[in-house]
Amino acid sequence: MAKHNNTSAKAVMRVLNGQLKVDEQALTRIFLKQLDNIYCVKKHLLTVLPDLSAKASFKDLKDAIIANIDMIKMQVLRMEVIYKMFRASYNPENCIGIKTFSLTALEDVMQSSKEPLENDLALLVHLQLIESVEIAYFNVLRNIAVGLNNTEVETLLCQNADTATSTKKLYELIANEYLI
Image (cartoon, rainbow, N blue to C red):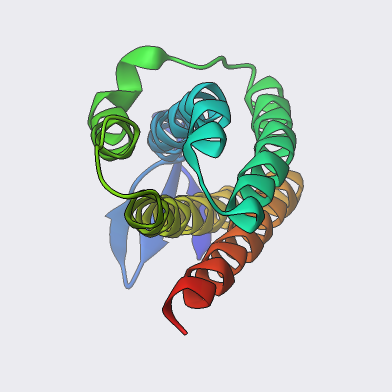
């Protein structure tokens, strides 16, 4: 992707196939708004996962959720480093929709009166969906970081995507134990 200096403005314009694209400032705003969304989900998970692990009936599921809490803390720390790199901070106003998605499904599992194994499977389905959303967010953010030519941020986001991918695979393996 080529970059041009716009002599009439300080923003760096992007050109693709002869058409002007999003400037660097706008791309950064988009990046930070989406970072807020995934940061919101991660912080929310840190508050609800301890209760969810207590509700799980299968020891492997309890252990996986507890291990995930530690991995989420590392992901959050990486995102806080990214905020510092951009001289920005988390804006909670940017996460209403994604928080609703996360909160509604988790509350359903927590308030459910289903059998323990049924609750476990419902929880596993939701946890896998959340990890899929996280993987998508981290990959999109990584691509934006590439567009911003920020390899440090790209590396941090790649690490978070890898963590989310391995967590999703663990949840899939545990779900298969119930089904096979």
